[in-house]
Structures are given as structure tokens and as C-alpha cells.
Length: 121
Image 1 (cartoon, one colour):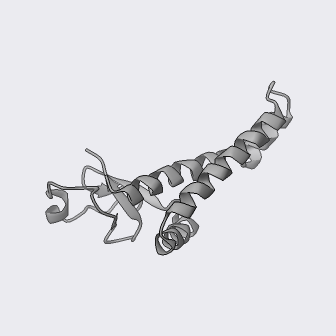
Image 2 (cartoon, helix red, strand yellow):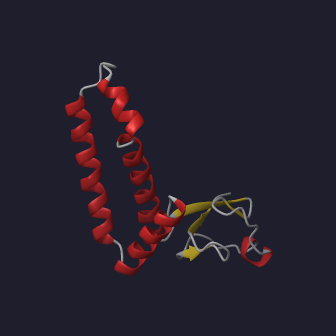
């Protein structure tokens, strides 16, 4: 798999975790007293942010800027292609792209919505 694509997928995962940890509902749930140490949660968020920054620093600037633009528009910057369909916009990819033997070896985008994509089986 393309190393930049791997980093984008990892970044997407980290962003989803941070979104969950920083959501109002989650923060309310830990302050209600679910035996959750708020300090431990704050430390975990800090670790996730540090890891995120490491990945961001490793990405080409143009790729990261596009990723952030896509996150602003779609709430995510990367989406899997499942059975030839973009899981962001649900457009079916042309058969010429789906039938290619080599996938995930380069950074690709959906021809419809422009999101970065990776292929699943």
C-alpha cells in the first residue's frame, strides 16, 4: 500500500477518535461519574494529538491541505471503495478502475466527490 495512503487512513482513524473523545456527549458522560478518570482521558487526548501531529508532519503539505478541506466538507478525508462504490458519495466507479489488478499503490481520489479513496476487497 502507498505509504501516504497508509498515513491518511491512520490520520482518519485518529481524527475519528479525537472527534469522539471531544464530543459534548462523551465529555458529559465522563463528568456524570462513570468511574472514568477525567485526567486519564485528557492525557489520552494529548497522546492522540501528538500522534496526529507526527503523521501531519510526515505528509506532503498539499495532501494534508486537501485532506483538511475534505474533512471540512464531508467530515472525513478518506473513504473506502467497497464493491466498486465510493462509501462517501455512493457513486459506482467505472469498471475500468474496478477491474485494475493493482490498487492502493498510489494516492487516488473518487472521480465524483474527490475524496481520497482506498480499495477494499
